[in-house]
Image 1 (tube, rainbow, N blue to C red):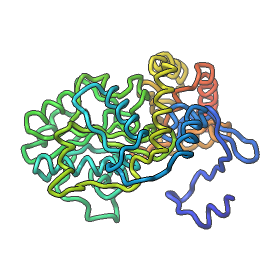
Image 2 (tube, rainbow, N blue to C red):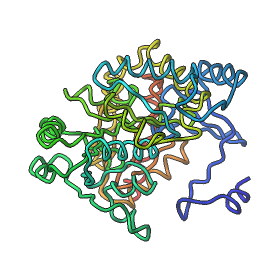
Image 3 (cartoon, helix red, strand yellow):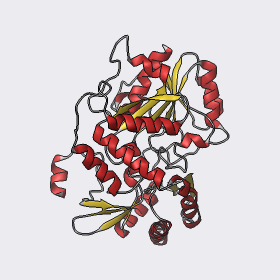
Image 4 (cartoon, helix red, strand yellow):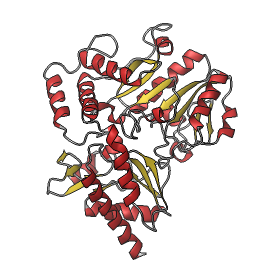
Length: 395
């Protein structure tokens, strides 16, 4: 199978990990030859309730037996979309009252940028250095890593960048700014948390200038941080919210959620101002609702502080420069790419799956399924520490 992978599939790096997956169960992934890996990244914050959760599989099977794709998004009443959308709006319990389902997080970003421009009548956008909002044209334009844009220009005009956690940069948000797009926690920058009420200050500046605040919770939504949505920890509300990753319970699904008057701009002048064929696929929505229901029924969010405490207590080593994050979303920071990559490879060989970050090269990601038990967390920490020590001792 690996030779066919190398021959026919497009690769996104020169040296893909290349692990062959036959099945997944709980926090583990298995290869055809029986090797297993403890999944310490959950498909990059996708498999919040673990692999092959029976509740999610049954929901997929039930919906697949009814219908797959009867109509493009937004024109027909489909129970999986309606029920899931209503539940998300209920959990938000704020001014965000309309949800638009897409296929992915990048598509959610694209839709949000469009409605922000039309609603405000403005053309300029502000985002953060080291931000990541997807790889499509508009999403890449507001991304914060110039190295990722090489060869893909010209991108969208009118985009400027500010430093995350630097309130002095907020003067760049002006009456010409349609929207500020920002992550609640900078994910691909190595898990950078906001400090000193920074996000409230962004909110205040947006209110002063009439700019909209687009909040990217694609990685942090649905309990990952110890809150159902991470912004709920920081006492503010966005105008538009981006969701994806775990939204689909393992199937492709994204969404942008907005105030009713903002979302209304796509309805006329022109009609069908934003359309998608497969967005909100009913099978994906059924899977997502089943995943969310499990998170709620099993009270997984309430268990996050104790699990985060295990990571903080256990992951201590002279080679670990910093452990930053919250809930079950952490960045493990070392002094170099070479050290981090060596740890990743040793951990992989020991049966622990982790990855680095897009916008920094000296860290490893920790984002296991929320269903991981405290005993399993200790096992994962044992494997990680043994890997760090092996690389450390060999230097």
